[in-house]
Length: 520
Image 1 (cartoon, rainbow, N blue to C red):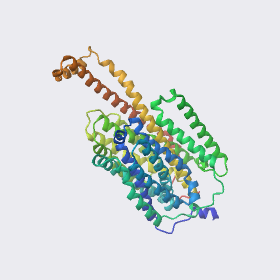
Image 2 (cartoon, one colour):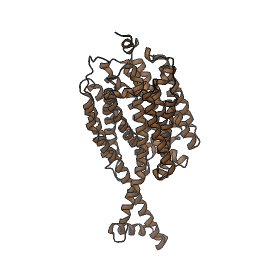
Image 3 (cartoon, rainbow, N blue to C red):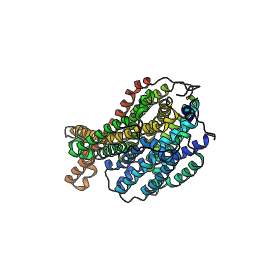
């Protein structure tokens, strides 16, 4: 056995469930924060007199800041040592959560969310890499199910807890709740997590400053376009065109730099592995769908249906129970079925859940929201756990941290783009539907006249002229609600079509068996 093979196959002497527990708590904190923040967006917007579009900056700023750190996780792990970098990231995430909680304006909150994104960026890829390494190859399906527990349990309580905290106290406390969890995560991580030989602090002989600069400029110029594109008419504004060009140029420059330099901050050669390449591409689209639907559903419930933040949380939280059920299914089937079939089943179910969301109307009961959320949560587990397993199974252990960073970067960038696109779609499609529906507001339309007469009669005490004006105002308000409803439904249907159309790509994965499989 060569020295490199011995290093790659080094086994930890301790029980793997101890570091797994520390990782789960850390992951729980990160995911809890994102699921809590979604239901509080309308309250955050109202607190700072911000528009619906501006409130989504709270999400996109976090995702893009994540993207700066995620792909460079392997480099920072070499610089500090992986365990040390994980602990530093957890501390930064905890402190920036406290800063979010005491924010007094939108600018301060977005700055704190950027810091929080920088802190949280490394947590997911390092946690995923540790879980993949601690368990042998034949148990990695189970390991990913355990890893998924931290990702899944938080959404079960996140929306409900976040809604209750927001309605009972204020949205500030949804960030402050991370502080005690972060302290516990740091203590357990320091006690139980150890670095294998290839993940320990090493001498960084060369710093890829140019690559890191290109990465930062690419992602933050992309964020500027995503955050401000809608209110500046996208490419109708000159500065949007120039910023988009800068972002694209830096992206191409970043790819060229990382492929040419001997010591890249992000090793893109992992894309030579077919499974990893296909899995990352699918993860980008799935990230766009999942983050987008999570962002717009609370807005739909609170703005159109009049739900409180607490009720919105109750309606969304069953997604976590569906995810838990999917987690159990994946753990049972991990080594008994071709992982590709689980990925396909998850994608189809995710498409079906979006179709169900796309068939809602203004007269629904909460049960109509709960069912598609359960299906969506189940689909998330059945899709993501085998997708992670099949994407990484052909990589070496020493490639895991770098590959995990790239994999999670794809999901964050996809989520940022998807969140911005869905916000634009709702605004633009709402205008289109309003233009189409307004043609029905004519005196020749019997339904319009019946409602107009009813409203006018109800307010006849205001005088004939004023009663007619109020009646028209109320009817036009209903028209705007219907136009916005149709826009939301269009978005869900578009995302359903995107997921289902990608199903054939799953057959491009290599068929893998996990028992007694030789490592590369």
